[in-house]
Image (cartoon, rainbow over all chains, first blue to last red):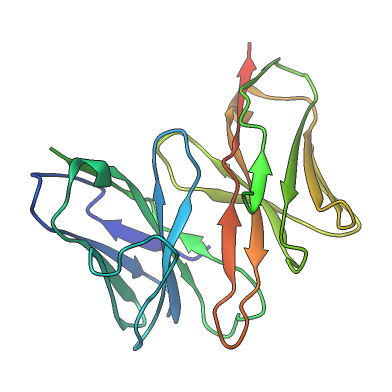
Length: 118
Length: 114
Protein backbone atom coordinates (compact mmCIF):
# COMPACT_ATOMS: atom_id res chain seq x y z
CA UNK A 1 0.00 0.00 0.00
CA UNK A 2 0.89 3.65 -0.21
CA UNK A 3 3.35 4.97 2.34
CA UNK A 4 3.13 8.18 4.31
CA UNK A 5 5.90 9.22 6.64
CA UNK A 6 6.02 11.78 9.43
CA UNK A 7 8.96 13.43 11.04
CA UNK A 8 9.77 13.62 13.84
CA UNK A 9 8.02 10.68 15.46
CA UNK A 10 8.42 12.22 18.87
CA UNK A 11 9.36 15.70 20.01
CA UNK A 12 9.66 17.42 23.34
CA UNK A 13 9.81 21.20 23.38
CA UNK A 14 9.62 24.02 25.86
CA UNK A 15 6.58 26.18 26.26
CA UNK A 16 6.66 29.18 23.94
CA UNK A 17 8.74 27.57 21.23
CA UNK A 18 7.57 26.46 17.78
CA UNK A 19 7.64 22.95 16.43
CA UNK A 20 7.44 21.85 12.80
CA UNK A 21 6.08 18.46 11.81
CA UNK A 22 6.57 17.09 8.31
CA UNK A 23 4.27 14.76 6.45
CA UNK A 24 5.49 13.12 3.25
CA UNK A 25 3.82 10.82 0.76
CA UNK A 26 6.66 8.56 -0.32
CA UNK A 27 5.34 6.75 -3.36
CA UNK A 28 2.48 8.85 -4.63
CA UNK A 29 1.56 12.46 -5.17
CA UNK A 30 -0.96 13.80 -2.71
CA UNK A 31 -3.06 16.74 -3.80
CA UNK A 32 -4.82 16.71 -0.45
CA UNK A 33 -3.42 16.08 3.00
CA UNK A 34 -5.23 16.15 6.31
CA UNK A 35 -3.98 16.94 9.78
CA UNK A 36 -5.54 15.32 12.83
CA UNK A 37 -4.93 15.65 16.54
CA UNK A 38 -5.63 12.96 19.09
CA UNK A 39 -5.66 13.51 22.84
CA UNK A 40 -5.35 10.52 25.19
CA UNK A 41 -8.42 8.28 25.18
CA UNK A 42 -10.07 10.44 22.52
CA UNK A 43 -10.57 9.99 18.83
CA UNK A 44 -8.87 11.70 15.95
CA UNK A 45 -10.09 15.24 15.52
CA UNK A 46 -9.65 16.75 12.09
CA UNK A 47 -7.75 20.01 12.39
CA UNK A 48 -7.38 21.11 8.79
CA UNK A 49 -7.41 20.10 5.17
CA UNK A 50 -4.42 21.03 3.10
CA UNK A 51 -4.53 21.27 -0.68
CA UNK A 52 -1.32 21.64 -2.62
CA UNK A 53 -0.70 25.21 -3.70
CA UNK A 54 -3.56 26.77 -1.77
CA UNK A 55 -4.36 27.84 1.74
CA UNK A 56 -5.40 25.21 4.23
CA UNK A 57 -8.99 24.96 5.36
CA UNK A 58 -9.28 24.80 9.13
CA UNK A 59 -11.99 23.12 11.14
CA UNK A 60 -14.06 25.20 13.49
CA UNK A 61 -12.24 25.98 16.69
CA UNK A 62 -8.75 25.41 15.28
CA UNK A 63 -6.61 28.57 15.32
CA UNK A 64 -5.03 29.02 11.92
CA UNK A 65 -2.43 31.44 13.27
CA UNK A 66 -1.32 28.93 15.84
CA UNK A 67 -1.25 25.87 13.62
CA UNK A 68 0.44 26.91 10.42
CA UNK A 69 0.05 24.52 7.53
CA UNK A 70 2.08 24.60 4.35
CA UNK A 71 1.56 22.25 1.41
CA UNK A 72 4.16 23.48 -1.01
CA UNK A 73 4.58 20.31 -3.03
CA UNK A 74 2.60 17.23 -3.95
CA UNK A 75 4.59 15.11 -1.54
CA UNK A 76 5.09 17.34 1.48
CA UNK A 77 2.89 19.13 3.96
CA UNK A 78 4.12 20.72 7.16
CA UNK A 79 2.34 21.65 10.36
CA UNK A 80 3.99 24.21 12.60
CA UNK A 81 2.72 24.57 16.14
CA UNK A 82 3.63 28.11 17.09
CA UNK A 83 4.16 29.32 20.64
CA UNK A 84 3.44 25.86 21.95
CA UNK A 85 1.78 25.41 25.32
CA UNK A 86 1.45 22.28 27.46
CA UNK A 87 -2.18 21.90 26.34
CA UNK A 88 -0.89 21.46 22.77
CA UNK A 89 0.72 18.19 23.86
CA UNK A 90 -0.95 15.58 21.73
CA UNK A 91 -0.56 12.96 19.03
CA UNK A 92 -0.58 14.65 15.63
CA UNK A 93 -1.35 12.44 12.64
CA UNK A 94 -1.38 13.35 8.98
CA UNK A 95 -3.00 11.54 6.12
CA UNK A 96 -2.64 11.87 2.39
CA UNK A 97 -5.11 11.33 -0.39
CA UNK A 98 -3.93 10.40 -3.86
CA UNK A 99 -5.17 12.59 -6.72
CA UNK A 100 -8.16 11.80 -8.92
CA UNK A 101 -9.95 10.25 -6.03
CA UNK A 102 -12.21 13.13 -5.11
CA UNK A 103 -15.21 10.87 -5.12
CA UNK A 104 -13.70 8.30 -2.84
CA UNK A 105 -12.29 8.73 0.57
CA UNK A 106 -9.12 6.76 0.36
CA UNK A 107 -6.55 8.16 2.74
CA UNK A 108 -3.21 6.83 3.90
CA UNK A 109 -2.12 7.72 7.39
CA UNK A 110 1.30 8.63 8.64
CA UNK A 111 2.64 7.02 11.83
CA UNK A 112 1.99 10.12 13.89
CA UNK A 113 4.08 12.58 15.88
CA UNK A 114 3.87 12.66 19.64
CA UNK A 115 4.38 16.22 20.87
CA UNK A 116 5.10 16.97 24.50
CA UNK A 117 5.33 20.59 25.58
CA UNK A 118 6.98 21.15 28.94
CA UNK B 1 -24.49 16.00 19.02
CA UNK B 2 -21.32 14.38 17.75
CA UNK B 3 -21.20 13.46 14.09
CA UNK B 4 -20.17 9.91 14.90
CA UNK B 5 -20.94 8.24 18.21
CA UNK B 6 -19.67 4.99 19.64
CA UNK B 7 -19.73 3.22 22.97
CA UNK B 8 -16.17 3.70 24.27
CA UNK B 9 -16.15 0.35 26.08
CA UNK B 10 -13.95 -1.29 27.15
CA UNK B 11 -15.26 -4.61 25.95
CA UNK B 12 -13.46 -7.37 27.79
CA UNK B 13 -14.11 -10.73 26.13
CA UNK B 14 -12.51 -14.17 26.28
CA UNK B 15 -10.72 -15.65 23.31
CA UNK B 16 -13.15 -17.23 20.90
CA UNK B 17 -16.04 -14.97 21.84
CA UNK B 18 -18.18 -13.03 19.40
CA UNK B 19 -18.37 -9.31 20.02
CA UNK B 20 -20.37 -6.55 18.33
CA UNK B 21 -19.73 -2.83 18.16
CA UNK B 22 -22.29 -0.21 17.22
CA UNK B 23 -22.01 3.26 15.84
CA UNK B 24 -24.47 6.01 14.90
CA UNK B 25 -23.89 8.99 12.66
CA UNK B 26 -25.78 12.25 12.37
CA UNK B 27 -25.15 13.42 8.80
CA UNK B 28 -27.76 11.84 6.57
CA UNK B 29 -25.79 12.96 3.51
CA UNK B 30 -22.86 10.70 4.39
CA UNK B 31 -22.24 8.10 1.73
CA UNK B 32 -19.17 6.18 2.81
CA UNK B 33 -18.55 4.28 5.99
CA UNK B 34 -15.57 2.47 7.38
CA UNK B 35 -14.19 0.65 10.37
CA UNK B 36 -10.60 1.43 11.29
CA UNK B 37 -8.45 -0.27 13.85
CA UNK B 38 -6.01 1.63 16.03
CA UNK B 39 -3.41 0.02 18.23
CA UNK B 40 -2.07 1.90 21.22
CA UNK B 41 0.09 4.87 20.20
CA UNK B 42 -0.15 3.97 16.53
CA UNK B 43 -1.91 5.45 13.54
CA UNK B 44 -5.34 4.11 12.52
CA UNK B 45 -5.46 1.46 9.83
CA UNK B 46 -8.38 0.62 7.60
CA UNK B 47 -10.07 -2.59 8.69
CA UNK B 48 -12.91 -2.61 6.19
CA UNK B 49 -15.34 -0.48 4.29
CA UNK B 50 -19.04 -0.86 5.05
CA UNK B 51 -21.45 -1.41 2.20
CA UNK B 52 -25.21 -1.03 2.16
CA UNK B 53 -25.79 -4.72 1.63
CA UNK B 54 -23.47 -5.65 4.46
CA UNK B 55 -20.11 -7.24 3.91
CA UNK B 56 -17.86 -9.82 5.43
CA UNK B 57 -14.10 -10.21 5.57
CA UNK B 58 -13.09 -13.39 7.31
CA UNK B 59 -14.15 -13.15 10.93
CA UNK B 60 -15.37 -9.57 10.51
CA UNK B 61 -18.84 -8.58 9.38
CA UNK B 62 -20.01 -5.01 8.87
CA UNK B 63 -23.60 -3.85 8.53
CA UNK B 64 -25.13 -0.52 7.58
CA UNK B 65 -28.65 0.71 8.25
CA UNK B 66 -29.09 4.00 6.42
CA UNK B 67 -32.61 4.59 7.68
CA UNK B 68 -31.43 4.43 11.28
CA UNK B 69 -27.99 5.89 10.48
CA UNK B 70 -26.45 2.97 12.26
CA UNK B 71 -23.33 0.94 11.56
CA UNK B 72 -22.15 -2.24 13.22
CA UNK B 73 -19.09 -4.45 13.31
CA UNK B 74 -19.21 -8.08 14.39
CA UNK B 75 -16.05 -9.99 15.25
CA UNK B 76 -16.34 -13.76 15.51
CA UNK B 77 -13.91 -16.12 17.20
CA UNK B 78 -11.97 -13.28 18.84
CA UNK B 79 -8.19 -13.56 18.93
CA UNK B 80 -5.79 -11.96 21.36
CA UNK B 81 -4.43 -9.99 18.41
CA UNK B 82 -7.84 -8.38 17.90
CA UNK B 83 -7.27 -6.30 21.04
CA UNK B 84 -7.29 -2.69 19.85
CA UNK B 85 -9.53 0.33 19.53
CA UNK B 86 -12.08 0.12 16.73
CA UNK B 87 -12.98 3.42 15.12
CA UNK B 88 -16.20 4.02 13.25
CA UNK B 89 -15.52 6.45 10.40
CA UNK B 90 -17.99 8.32 8.24
CA UNK B 91 -17.40 10.73 5.40
CA UNK B 92 -18.58 14.32 5.60
CA UNK B 93 -19.46 15.32 2.05
CA UNK B 94 -17.85 18.40 0.60
CA UNK B 95 -20.09 21.01 -0.98
CA UNK B 96 -19.30 23.89 -3.26
CA UNK B 97 -15.86 22.56 -4.06
CA UNK B 98 -14.98 21.75 -0.48
CA UNK B 99 -13.06 18.58 0.12
CA UNK B 100 -14.93 15.61 1.46
CA UNK B 101 -13.53 14.49 4.78
CA UNK B 102 -13.45 11.52 7.09
CA UNK B 103 -14.89 11.98 10.57
CA UNK B 104 -13.84 9.56 13.28
CA UNK B 105 -15.84 8.26 16.20
CA UNK B 106 -14.24 8.13 19.62
CA UNK B 107 -13.54 4.44 19.23
CA UNK B 108 -14.46 1.31 21.12
CA UNK B 109 -11.73 -0.42 23.08
CA UNK B 110 -11.63 -4.20 22.79
CA UNK B 111 -9.55 -6.33 25.14
CA UNK B 112 -9.51 -10.04 24.33
CA UNK B 113 -8.49 -12.08 27.34
CA UNK B 114 -6.68 -15.45 27.19
